Image (cartoon, rainbow, N blue to C red; front, side, top):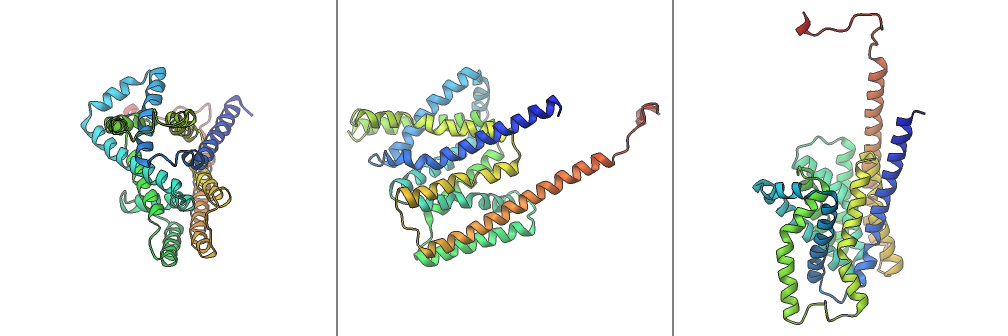
Length: 327
């Protein structure tokens, strides 16, 4: 095996490990937020914005990336696009923290199980991408699972639907952005930081803020919000650049799976037989979607390899090919 192949294999292995660790940490995040359930979710999200910004600015300072942020701040289009994506991300965070801290961890896991299928639907109806038959069937199965849950609960699983919708919309905005992962997240956080800081100052002034009024352990947890947010995102950015998209798609189910286990075994939420049936439709949809992606990726790789094998090889003693400019 050549040195290049060994290096590529090592890169792919480290990328897969980073992505798996990222999704595993995202799956464990409910354990962190539950420790802060006595603090209002809006205040927690404000802290998350402020301390994430501090962490990201320090990181960009080390990397020397302030020029990219300044360039983005001078672009009205970049500001508008990232403001919208920041609002979607903030809504997702707020509903997620509220859901976790009010005993709906299983429903939050459902939301993130739905995200890949929401992304497929957005690709079709927003970006006008072509869908294969298996992808249409997967969307139909997921819709049937949600409809069954609505029938059983007597209401839409709005936490799951809002999480899937806001994260899908955020993913769509990030896909259309020209900014890198760290620069984009920094700009999004920076745009909403004045509101977050203003809210925290107001909370402290009215005597309702957590800082200065809680124990040392809770202070440490609140101030850790930036690290808890940024580290998985950095692991994701590292992994996404080094592994295939199909592998990344398989690994993303790790986070909601861990959340589901936490909801059942750690937080003792009810997982009735009727809810299992609803999840079964969605899991079947995800299995079909994943299998179709893997097969499509293999077909594409095989076709590319076959083309390279069948391409004519020029003899060393033959004259070089000439373009029309040489004639």
